[in-house]
Image (tube, rainbow, N blue to C red):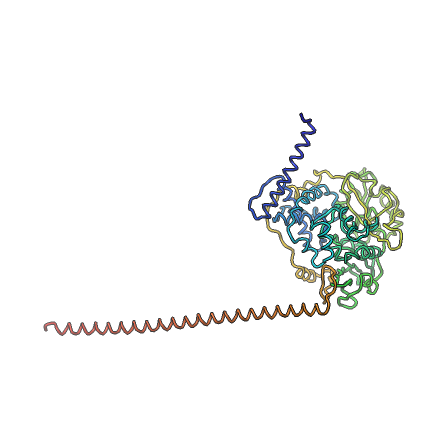
Length: 580
């Protein structure tokens, strides 16, 4: 006889196997073109994944919205591509979009996202052929590494990726290099690395053999602030004339952006990487054209961008950046009295400190001046909000939840002061961007039923709205007067750095291109000649037919005239025979 516990374990295994078989049936039926579809527990999961894709598509195409290409988005999009369907939800809730797009807020919905991620990750074993090759493009070394070590998988655990990297490069990673690489490849702390993120890293820091040194070179600059939204950069620089900073466009590491406030308004310049060499191309306001430099550092040094924006406030452990008051209340829900965070304010020239006050039923908010020095910030917080005593740190949070990253590394989880902040390394070449886990408590689903229903309810099937092509998008931004400027150099641009082609190779490619063009026009001319010959033949046949018809009509007319003449002659002879 089996015990009750053994029976429950057997039932759970049976359910798990049923779900796995359902996933395989679903994917196999779609993959081999069958029209049958088995509805079951996985149906709601697929609907949830596809509903998420719709939300993220709207987020990406919205004006001023950040680009979302983190591991959650990769795996959800991949599951959606496998299933071949697009599901949209009737609810257009902007709150869920902000929660997904902000790494500091996504923990509130971390449980739902983790469930979707876990189930959709199981679909990845049914990977269509050619996806990995399409992602890497011409990066032979990167494609060779991924194919050899992971056999073309879409996503692999970060620990396995780290070990295989060491085996392939014959160079084991130290703790600081692991921290830097994890920050670049797994900013959302999913503990996995997708092929898209790896290819993006090669685009920015490649080739593969130089990734680590190039990565440390950029992250060690004082003016580099890591992942940051466009609005956060504008908030920091708006009150700092003649200043600039460099950042990653949240959350994609192959989109490096220079944000500068020189002309009185903050403008953003996307850095493009030149094919065949380690050079960058950026739009220069001073020269009025796109210029190429050996590195981002050289462009920053030689260009009139102003002084670097250097402040410890954006990397304070309790600074949450672009967070609204309602979202701050969710972050502080269930925390001890006196727990606080600092965020941007809607009032120009001020930050807002949000804190827990048990006397009131909701979180309280106070203004502090933005020009406050970092070492005076905590004192100013206590003056403006005397009940704000405990920074929002690991020690004040429930550690049972999934970790959510920020761009901060501190020495311990204790409630230390701001002056105890340390970086990933102790020397001057240390990257100011580290990795810190901000763990938030599990929120009951009942508190977010309106927004969570977009994941868990069955949605209506419809076609996906594709975002406009890049050229049309750029034109729309220019017409709208956007401050985001993307470099468009005259030379060939590429997604990855590959060895430059030799002159003979370039001549051969040009000859091939010209030969194909000539062949194309010769084929067009021959087709036109054939069409003209056929048209002439049809005209001749029509003319001959018309002549035959005319001749037949003439003969018929003569025959009719002859018959009429005979009829008249017969009538006359008949009348002459009759008696008078």
